[in-house]
Image (cartoon, rainbow over the protein chains, first blue to last red):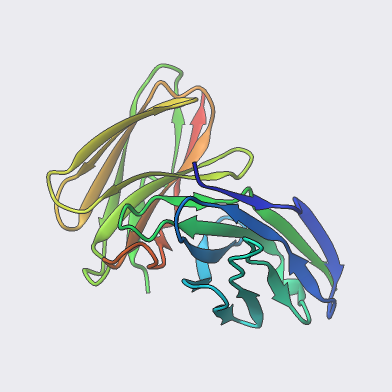
Amino acid sequence: GDSVTQTEGQVALSEEDFLTIHCNYSASGYPALFWYVQYPGEGPQFLFRASRDKEKGSSRGFEATYNKEATSFHLQKASVQESDSAVYYCALSDQTGNYKYVFGAGTRLKVIA
Amino acid sequence: VTLLEQNPRWRLVPRGQAVNLRCILKNSQYPWMSWYQQDLQKQLQWLFTLRSPGDKEVKSLPGADYLATRVTDTELRLQVANMSQGRTLYCTCSGPGLGDAEQFFGPGTRLTVL
């Protein structure tokens, strides 16, 4: 079945550091790729998506580029803030209308002021 | 703007007892409704997507059995039975499409096993 792997379980950074969270996927078809963010006590929130190879998604200073050859969709931000502390999820959807989303295990980001 | 209401927001569930959850859609622009579970390790897992009133599905997973029902265009229900570990259930809504639409998550219902 389809799967999403996030390499980092936890990341600790100082404010203004550069962020990378690695996401690799395995899918039989051509999936859409997503990043979601979850703050404590809340449901996950959509951050952005990319639906085709080489497409870049971005929002709130975060970005990721769909890389079909490397099966990757790594999340980056040039300068993190304390308010970015949250859990980040990479996800895929098979784009066939089944709406079966597959989420990665999540990466907990802690930014220290 | 709140798109989804979930109730209850939390519940203590005696072992062996079933619990019924409810989700109300506030914006018909996003008519496809789904349930997701999040376990104690924060892993998110899609359970169901129910598109039309009258749709019903069942699923058995490690730790719980589920029965989901799309009651009306705006109401989704979930019965959780035989739960052995706590979890949070999220209702979501999205626009119709081929599967690249964003999911809007509700605030969740947190279940704890007694």
